[in-house]
Amino acid sequence: MHIKKDDTVVVITGKDKGKRGKVLKVFTKTGRVIVEGVNVQTKHQKQTRKERSDIKHIEGAIDASNVMYWDSKSKSGSRVGHRIEGGQKVRYAKKSGNSID
Image (cartoon, rainbow, N blue to C red; front, side, top):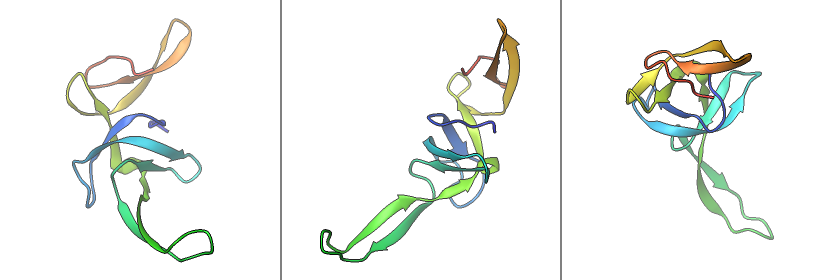
């Protein structure tokens, strides 16, 4: 997968197109990611003995193909490539060429 946890990404399609956020969680088996402030859903919390009832707003998962790595150097979304540097496989932004890892 081209996106990892704590990457800054921009949404390229859907209702939240154009929003930027930090990746909070990555689900590699399903190919989905949770991005901070994107795809916010309303959950109604039922009252229990310990907690009151509440309406919570939490981020839902979106498909990893709908996000693009945010390249801070070029100030836009960029595709991610892989190359070998010093015997290590590193990710790099294809638009600017600078390494991510």
